[in-house]
Image (cartoon, rainbow, N blue to C red):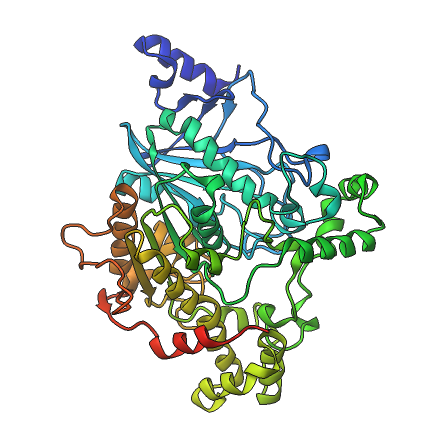
Length: 529
């Protein structure tokens, strides 16, 4: 019996309370006892397993139930991040990574719950990153925050025919990372009441890859009943470019396997892939280094990195998200959706991309992504002369085509069925890690979580303090009631297609009509190659 557990038991005996009511930090889950830590005026339980380690025979399979533990588990530190070759917090990780982190107010029950899915292009990131710490939201806004690790890269999304035939009840291949997220939501349903949460009042929220994932769960009947409302930040939820099909993803997986010396499509190939180290798997499926990429950045390398992305398997993802939203075949639930003013610039910075030097390189990149038939129209709409450089021009193309106009499509699709709130984040960070990026992709994160010093790409600072307070108020009120409005806040009207009204989140919060009408109408008319 460790010292912390001994102290907890002593406190429980002394007060004559039940096990979960003694020190407020000792909680009995469906798999065993966890002992949390005090986090300011909140409480935290970190690195709690929600599924079995996806190792050995469990690799390239849907998540399996976590094994119960008999001794109390110390939940004082976040668990290992899932393996990744690039990360803002450093590469590396461990395949035993399926953990959640929970922050809760100091007392009470039936609290609203916010479950966070991190971004990182499905290849990097972790729910344990310091800038996703839920302490501030829990102690200031009286909500419970849960952050989730899920499998990344090839370990989370490698499709292969050999995997699809292993379990008749799971006729899929790849998308393991999305089902990890679903398993975490199921864990919340089973356990969150023990932390003071209300399983009937869960909001799923995420950014970038996490925002896309949020939309995928919002649409999927397999995730029905696991959350009451959703927030998607910069999620590409109705991108004009469909996710790869299962056939495309599995063909790419066969190529990856052959490159690793695992030929064929049967059980031998599956066993061979499970015998490889995670380093070997990620090495052959990673994005090429910047210096080896054609100019244009990760969206313009040519095709998709099919072994590290979700695929349309007809099971986990039934159809392309854009088509699914447009068809209206989903359970209507309140949705808050939007993005940042300059979404594309980060992906074309020297941090991620071999920058475009001139118009020929600009046209070449556009051809690779949009097809030769669309290039002249795109260049006419985004002429280099209107921007500081060719690189900035393509940043605007990326921001509008992948993010801004996709968010508008999503809002238009849901507004007729459920309360929908559409936003544009337009507050610059202070001390940006790179200059000239504007209000770049992911820069809203410290404003949402109140984790200013921890975010490595910029600071909220004094200039952004009021914006951060406004965002946190809108997000948490939405999580509690499905309506972000509240006393003292600028009124945020539900989205209506006729006016395209959205809320600008900046130092001066205000509503604006007709969100990027001309360019979004342009992109809605573009036919992908």
